[in-house]
Every structure is written in C-alpha cells, then in structure tokens.
Length: 492
Image 1 (tube, one colour):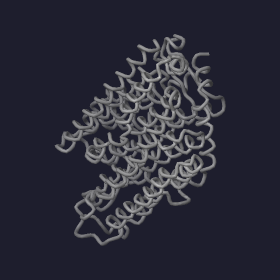
Image 2 (cartoon, rainbow, N blue to C red):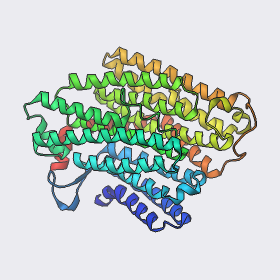
Image 3 (tube, one colour):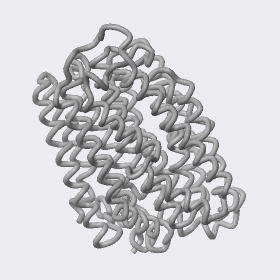
Image 4 (cartoon, helix red, strand yellow):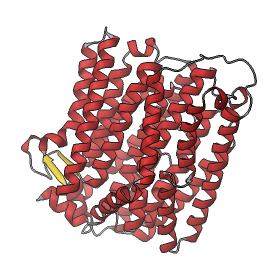
C-alpha cells in the first residue's frame, strides 16, 4: 500500500531525472518517457483497485504523524483522477514520438512532461494545503516552459498571459493558506476540516473560502477568470495542447471539489449557490466563444471552458448523485478533450493549418480519422450511447431532483450549441471539398493514430460500461461527503 501511494510521484520524478541525464540522446529520452508513462499507468490502476477494495489509503511521509508531517492520501476520487491522468500521459507520449519536432525534444520536452506529471500526481495525492500549493507550482513551472518551448512569437505571448494569471492565482492561494493557518494553526486538510467548524468566525471563514474560490477558479478557468486559456492553449504543438487540455484545468476543478466538500461547508447556502451560478455562466460564455471561432484549436479551447461549467455544476448542487455525475463528467471530458486536440494535430499534419476556411476533404481522403473525430465530438456533445450522454444525463437528473431548473435549462442549451460547433468543425474540416492543394503531408505515422484510436475506444467503453463507472463515482462521492471518514483515516 505504501509503495503504491508513493509511486505516482516517484515514477515521473525518476523518469524526468533520468531523461536529464540522457540529455544528449533523444532516443534514450523517448524510451525513458515510454517506460515511465506505462509504469505510471500500471501503478495507478493498481492503486485504484486497492482503494476500491480497502478504502482510503494514507501514508505519513518520513514517519511524521499527521497533522504535523506531510501526508499522502488516496480516496476513490483522487485514485480515479490519477488513473485517467496516467492513461492520458501514456497516450500523449506515444503520439509525441511521431509528432514532436527535433528542436523541442532536444531542449527538454520529455523531462518537462515527466515533471509536469509529477506535479499533477502530487496535487491529487497530497493531504496538506501547503503541499498542494507546492505541487501546483511544480506543475505551473513545467507547463510554462512547455508552452514557451520553441520560442515562437505566438507561444511567447500566450505563455506570458498564462504565467501572469497563474502567478496571481498562486499568490491568492498562498494568502488563503496563510489566513487558514492563522485561524486554525494547521494546514493538514483533515485537521482543518476538524477545526474549521469550531472557529466561531463564519464571516472570516467565508472570506477565506472566496479566496480559494478565486485562486482555484483561475486555475480551473471558470467565469469570469477564463480568458487566459483560449489565448494560450492553441499556440504550442498539438501534443502539448492535448495534455494541457486533458489535465491542467482538471487539477483546478479537483482542488475546488476537494476544499468545498471537505473544508468550506459551513455556509453552503452562500458558497455552493455561488458556485452553481458560476457554473451556469461558465457554460454559456464558453460555448458562445466556441461558436464564434473559426480556428479548430480555438474552438476546442473555448469548449474546455464551457465543459468546466458542467464539472462544477455538481459541486454547486452538492448532493451525492450530483457529485457522482461531476466525477463521471471529469473522467469523460479528460479523455475526450485530449483526443480532440490529438485529432487536430493530425489534421495539421495532413493540411498544414488549423484554419477552418483552409481545410476540407478529409472524410474522403482519411475516413478513419473522420470516424475517430466523430466519436470524440459526439461524446462531447452528449450523443448516446457515448460517455458524454451519460455524464450530462446524470447532471440533468441531479439538477431536476434539486429543483434547480434554471441551471438544467442552461446545461441543455449549452449542449445544443456544443453540438452545433462540433458540426461546424465536421463540415469545414471533413465534409466540404478541399479548397486547394494540401500544404501538409499525405500520410500520418501510425504512432499518431494509435493513441487516438485507443482513447476513442475508451470513450465508447465508458459509454457502454457507464453503470460501472457511475457506481465508482457514487462511492467516491459518498467518501467525499463523509468528512468524518476522511478525518479518521488521516488522523487515526
């Protein structure tokens, strides 16, 4: 158990260090990335199986007992997030070996990917707020360099926006951590959950909660804090965009769900209704932004924003079923959105552009790619029997059960506009005739299509096996709502 809890951090850390030692050999770096990503996927699946069977897993790092030492905690929610993240990393590593240019590989692409994953895994596992801040910074530094790697003008502009807003988020996060410590004398999340109820200063606790809402809201790209995302995610290579789209905002969503189910539950009528309002506004602004775009990756970037609204809708409703639907939605979206960005990279390889007006004819020349795009696009739009249908259905049912009909209406309308914008990509990229000769290549490496096919298969499997994943999500939601179980597991 102890080894499994540390492996998601140790494996990418060792992989990144080994890649740095092999700096002069791209071949060795590629092999290390492939082995470590596969090993991480295997270890996280084993951890998920163990947590599902035995309950919350905890380890005191350095044998310092909680709440005084660093603690790693894996419940079903964090174990599920780790598993999906590892599978995505493995797919992106395979894709990168056929798509990434020599220059970026020579200047640390694979070590940076490893350290990015170390930060992601650390954020999912930590049971301490200050260490959550540390893992966010590891993730931020790695992602900033990955975004700027290559030094193209558009990349540098977007990287500056990205890092500026995320540094502001980190400053607010750190301020919130300091205020919580001044009030409780603790930063261990289980100890905070135990003490915050007895602080007796509900106004101060609510103010601190708003600091965390803004800090994590920036990282998750919720309304009105999302504008850095569509200005940056479309500029790096497709593999980098794919792993950013699949993982980074989801860490922010994870943090929001974690602190607003475990810590800030003293004034639910205020905090969670505010989150529900933000969810609706995030859906609307994101999908309208997507409809207005005419560049493939910018459309997909705005869709990340609108889909974040669905993910925090369940948190705002704050019932077991709603939280389970949010967890299901996060898993579905991580797979689907990563795959759509990987498809965009293949389109660029074949046609040399992401501009819709300059694309067309790919259904005739590459029907397999069209079919794989359709699976991901229809799932994102919520078409049965794919994963997105069951994810949205769960949230709609939860909203109706809670008599929150306005947010249900917003979610349904957003789904319609999502389908409209996906149909727009389909028509412009695949269905219409090509406007001219292709500027890209005529063929695609198998290592680019295999990960896309595998993730499409996962999307179909989630849809066909929705009952299993929803059962796991329900158990994860029950764990999160049972705060005493988390506290007892950590503090013993």
